Image 1: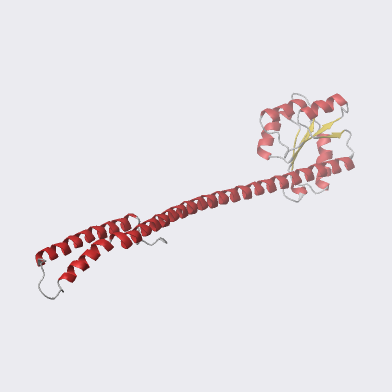
Image 2: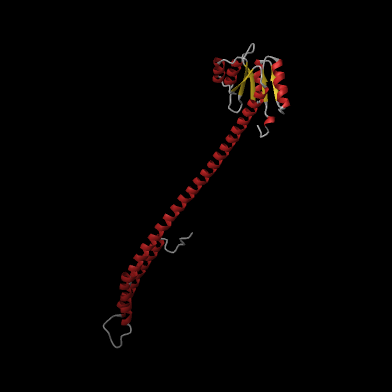
Amino acid sequence: MNADLNDARILIVDDQWSNIDVLENFLLLKGYSNIRTTVFSREVISIVQEFKPDLILLDLMMPHVSGFEVLQQIQDAGLMSELMPIMILTADDTVEAKKKALSGGARDFLSKPFDLTDVDLRIRNMLLNIYLMMQLKDQNKELEEKISDRTEKLRHSNSALELAKKLLEEKIAAIQEQNKTLKEISWIQSHVVRAPLVRMMSAASLFELDGPTNIDHIEISKLILDAANELDVIIREISQKSKNAHLFEDLNS
């Protein structure tokens, strides 16, 4: 149903053509143009399924299938809906009849003989309520879609934050490992490397002594070579530590 209530689809069910004529002509006069009528209550279900009315005006006292039975059939067929209200047409104004109709799914009553002013007000108020309910339903659906969309975006954001946190933790661990390795290399350079280097320098200085010495040049060379081999081993260890700690890799990658 759109905002123009006169476009509403209205189904009138009454076993008396005279009643139908009164209601149909009055509704046409009021600007309603989408009207279906029937005097055969057995046709109601098929008409509802095909016509999909926004409002049903239903007589209670009809032969073959009464209005109460039509209400039950509509319920059994799964066609009863707040967005398709049923307004009862009845001359039976008793409390029992009204209770039975309401329990069957009816929403309002029009008493016979019809007061056309009452008919106009009740039908327009009923259609207006249905239109407002549809608007509210659409707004709720739109709100649910927005909430769902924002929830999905938030889920993706949380996933991105978790990934960023994990990467940051990995970077911090890598930096800590590099700092540890740098400290070890610094200690090695300050203490371990210095010893063979000093021996090499001391042995090499023997070649510069003037005058005869009791030190064999071959032994001096061996001292230098041993110290060099020891230094080579230390340098290889430093290189391996640097590699294991990814010391010279770019942490921004």
